[in-house]
Length: 314
Image 1: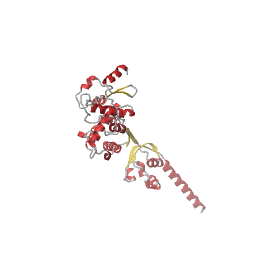
Image 2: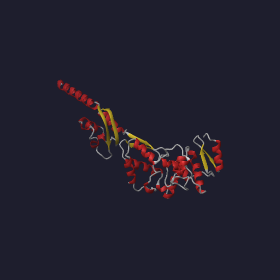
Image 3: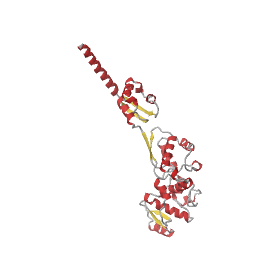
Image 4: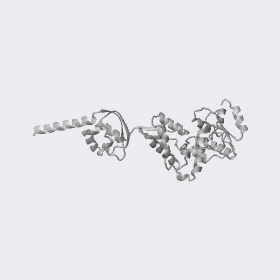
């Protein structure tokens, strides 16, 4: 009897050692795994070699049948044991692609940034934009300039063009609910103005004042005369606009054409849109950069020129 017990004890020790060894033995990985919502764990992990291991299957059963594993993309790079692999999949710490749209970026700049990051095919991206349906705001000739809200977005490492577009446009709608802006054409005009304000303002607290100066110019039948609208034609590649640039024949040249340009010239944030809807009450018509991020505002062209004469070095 004692011999039988010794044999059983030895068997338990050996089995335990085998289990521990199997669960803690590390294997080299270098692959991306997608866990899809609604898809069985076995199907999601079918390309992971260890998934066919009996110990892996038993461990998953012990770990709530794998129900705690979270959907997402996981970059498995390095050595993992069965235990550490399952821990990673349950943690939800999937590999994320974080993409930031800076305030005032144009759609072209955003697309180029995605291309540089190696996330999209430019032609396919614009093709997907053409396929967007039921967007609640005006998109003249399929132009979505102004609707790519400046924010940091989290995408799975492997992401497609359509998902990027859908996510960003949903963020815009969340920021500007359609029911809050029943007059969509009016909203579009405000968005155009907001985009100009965004490009002209450096300090957020000046946005309502800049908005006021532009609206005052419109009321008097003056041109907006915004360098930013002209620079839009050069995809903001120019550090400064010269007099020869102001002769360019385009509806975006607000030195030659009165009123607003035909579309937004950038993607503004909430504060710029709010400034567009709620300009300060001033009589300013002109403003010029002072060199510290702020502007000098004036009511007359003479005062405007005098400031420039006295501050040539700026």
